Length: 436
Picture 1: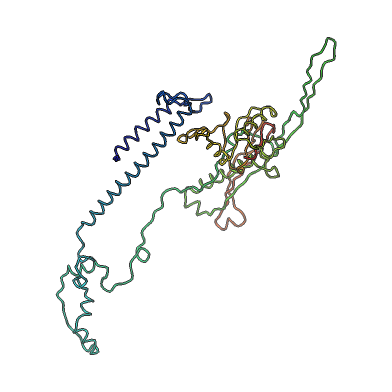
Picture 2: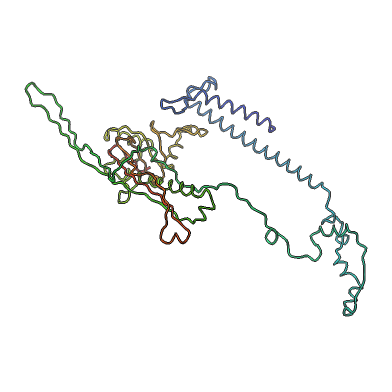
C-alpha cells in the first residue's frame, strides 16, 4: 500500500512528464493562437511517435493522473477523519461539570433542589392537611456548592419556558459586503460589428445594383463594347431602445451605491437589447432589422453534413456569391458544444485535449457564441465595415424625472435610452446556417 506522501510524489512526477509532452507539442499559429502538434513530441521515446500514438499516450497519462488524484483525495479524507477522531477523544477526557447530568451513579444520589426537599418534608405535608393553620418552621443543612451544582442541571428550580434565540436574545446578523449578481446573457455580437456615428434620423446609402462588364476584344475600326452600371438608394431608419425603473427618494439617499447600480443596470439592459436586435430583430417598427431577417442573405442547410462542413459551405457562398472575405462564425453555445466534443473513431478529441481550453475557431475563423437566437441555427459572414455597420444616433443616455404623482409621493423615475440604425449593405456577404 502507498502512503499519502508517496502518492503525492508520484502525482507530481507524472504531472511533470505530461507537461513536458505539451511543451514539446506546443506551436503558435500565424494568427497568434496556441495549438499542439503531437508529431513533434520526442520525449516519450522511439516507440511512441506520430500524432495518434502520442495522443493515445497522452490520454493514458491523463487517466493515470486522474486515478492518482482520486487516491490522494481518499487518503487525505482518511487522515482528516483520524484527526477528527483524536479531537473528539480529547473532549471525552475532559473533567465533568459539577452536578452535571451523568456525574452521579443514580438519580437518587443527585443533589436535590429546595423545591424537591420541601415536597418530601413530612411536617410540610401534615401542615397542608390541617388546612395550613398559623405558620410552620423547618430548616435544611445545604452547602452553597450543592445549590450551584443543581442550578447547572437542566431541571432547575421552578422550571419556566425555554430561553432560546426565538424567545430570548436573538443573535445579531451582519450582511456580507456587496451582493451576488443575478445571471443574465452577456453582450455577444455587437462587439464584432463595426460602429459609427450619425446625425440623421434615417441612414441613407447608395448600392450598386447593376454592374455588367462587357469588356471584349475588338478588331481595328470595330465598335467598342459597352458596359452597364446603375445605383439604387437604400435606407434604414434609426430606432430607439428604452428602459426605466421607479425608485423612492429613501432608496437613493440611504444606500449610496444604489444610484450607480441603477445607472449601470439600465445602460447594460439597453445595450443587451441592441445586441439581440442586430441579430434577430424582425424589422417591424420600432424594431431594427437583424442580420438573419435581411432580404438577400444567403442560406445553407446542413442536411447529412457534419457541422464543420456546413459552415465551410457557407464560407464558400460568402466568397463566391457575396464576393466578401468571411471573418466570423456565429453559433449558439449548445451547437458549439457539439463541435467542441467531436472525436475521432479512436476517441481523440479533434478540437483539443479536454485539459486545455481549446481554440474557439473553426476553419481559421473566430467562433462567436451568441444566445439571442435559439440553438439549431447559425451564421457565417464578413463582419467588415463595407458590408455591415451599426450607427449610433445617440449613445445610452440616463435621465431622472417625475411621472404623474411621483413628486408628492417621494419617488422618481430613472430612465435610459439610445437611438441606433443598423445597415447590412451587402446581404450576400452573410449566410444563414440551418439544421444544426
